Amino acid sequence: MRYKRSWLSVIFDTFNYLFLGLFACSTILPFLYVLACSFSSEKEILERPFYIIPRKIQLTAYEYIFSSPTLPRAFLISIFVTVAGAATAMFFTLTLAYPLSKKNLVGRNFLLALISFTLVFGGGMIPTFLVIKNLGFINKFWALILPGAISTWNLLVVKNFFQEIPQEMEDSARVDGCSALGTFLKIVLPLSMPVIATFTLFYAVGYWNDYRSSLLYMTDNKKWPLQLVLRQIVLMAAGNIDGATFDEAYTQPPLEGSKNAVIIFGTVPILLVYPFLQKHFVKGIMIGAIKG
Amino acid sequence: MNSASVQLHGNKKSKGKSKLTTIRKDLWLYILLIPGLLHYLIFKYLPMWGILIAFKDYNAYLGFFDSPWVGFKHFTDFFSNPDFRKLLSNTLIISFYNLVFGFPAPVIMALMLNEIRKEWYKRTIQTLVYIPHFISWVIIASLTYTLFNSQGVVNRYLLQMGWEKTVPFLTDGEYFRGMIIGQTIWKETGFGTIIYLAALSGVDPQLYEAAIIDGANRFKQLWHITLPSIKSTVVTLLILRLGHILDNGFDQIFLMSNSLNRKVSEVFDVYVYTIGITRGAFSYSTAVGLFKGVIGIILIYSANWLAKKVGESGLF
Image (cartoon, rainbow over all chains, first blue to last red; front, side):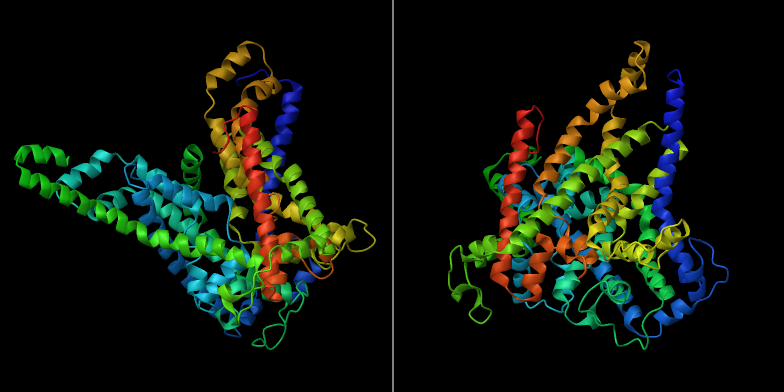
């Protein structure tokens, strides 16, 4: 022990361990409860207070979800947007970050100023909407993928990472007759696999969780991703959102259990990638924090 | 590298040739820039130019160029609209609560985590508290709804504990701000600790050892060593936060608002959406958005200036 423990110190430690433990439980227990509810009968959900193990496991909630094509379709759309979005975003981010990492690039400071300015000021929701509309992207999946394809913060972190790669490695490739493109593809990218993995995951989570783009740009509800359908099923059906009409594809309004099942649908993919994400994001944040 | 090969050959012809190859080699760097820069032009700078419609009466048939100029009409309309005061006070109150309760929360939690000596316990806590950051607002609003509605598990516990009737957490404006701050704290506190914990891990352990020898108790160590080591991080994040004081986060507020709590839940971000997208008043809502953006940029530069004034490094 590094210090003499006074009684005050012991009280503080006890409180500290307990409080943090409780907070940590509060982050995971709601999900476990919802998971349990999604496998329970309506009666059990209404009768029992908080529980995490259902008395009898049943699949009515999931059967209900699959009784119409709405949710499976939304799930597939979300997966498509997430995969295509993350790939597009990585293409834009990597190709822009690499030239900007070269300190002798003519016009670099100007370009960096132009890019950094978007961190403090932007066109706002309506002008952006009008740009997307005039591009003819309404009800096109491009509208969900392209506008968010570069996060300035991610771009700057990747640029800083590229700057850290020893120039000598690239120089030797260039002497051997490799073009800048060849050096980028054959030397720089293979050295950047951890960073690529991190930001692919970051972008993927962003696309998966995004509902604002589809709210703004997708008027056709057959093209809605999971988040928007989820909002409709859980919040609208509950009357929490005005002007709501429930999706006519389902013959009856959702039961409590099926709402829980929908929430699980939206959460599980995130929880599946979380272990991989966690391995990297601390480091990712650090690179950004040190260099600003 | 290339100059070496030039010296090796030494004649003029190959010198010229190698210069040409250098340019051709660097040409790729400029080609690589193109998609990303186009992205910034189309999706970031074109909308900024589009802000001009705030000074026009935008009409979809006439289009961007032919719509008539109206000067500051939309701004005077907005400032004289009774909605303006409501929006401003709703926005500022939520921001103020977020600043007072939401901002210190990760600092405090990082300090608490820093006091935990059992590594496995600390790591488990960290793994769990980072999770909500990655969950979408739709899911969090849905969870909140499921848990807090009048038949939800929270209300059932309250009834069991002797409450006379259910608490309308979701439908009464009185609870709206509390719910919003609660959600934010639950979602972002854990993740927010990362940056402070990083600053704390950089502290030289010898400082603590010396302090112990000098007889400093834990509180004194916290005050004289731990807190100063995260001071500049706190200031930096505070600057960023001040710049966003008029942003309440559209996603969260929009999902949590309903006709029953509209009096307190209507903030600038949601207002721009309702007026602009739902009712099609593009020019007016752009003016509202511009007002918000200009205040934001003024705030962020002032906060930065202030931070430098008090001896911190600032952001730029």
